Amino acid sequence: MRGKNTDYSAVFRMLMVVATAAYVSLSVSGIATAKDTEISKAKTSSITAKKRTMGSAKGKMTEQGAVDRVMQMPEVKAFFRDVSKSKIAKPAIDFDRKEGDAYVIHVYEVVNDGPDNSHTATKNWYYVNIKTGKITKEF
Figure (tube, one colour):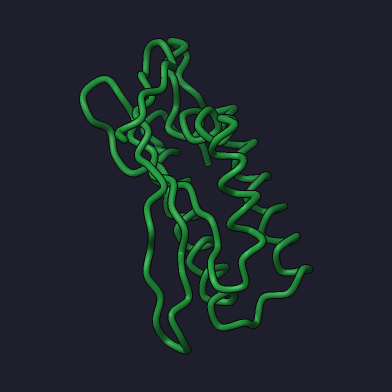
């Protein structure tokens, strides 16, 4: 039920964490199938579409809007395409935090190191200005 004090961004982040954790767990364990991937993408797209409709009335960038903006960058698209071909790594993108007037977006890969081990490798950190949408790379 919608109320004036509903924090949709917190609900969205929680849903994304659960969906991502489940997918990464299945992928790393080798259980994920093409069908699992399609279902995961469909659920994420549905949640993302709902989040976009909950953006600020003042026209400011939302957290998900910042993620979407970074995801459209040619270098990020290429990273996702290339890492998706790997048998031991999966690409990922997450809203990390708000820092000043920017949302910080983390682009990285989750690398499978064995049955119960994995690590992450950062591609880059992207700062998306909340007011202008301008993207600045950390490195």
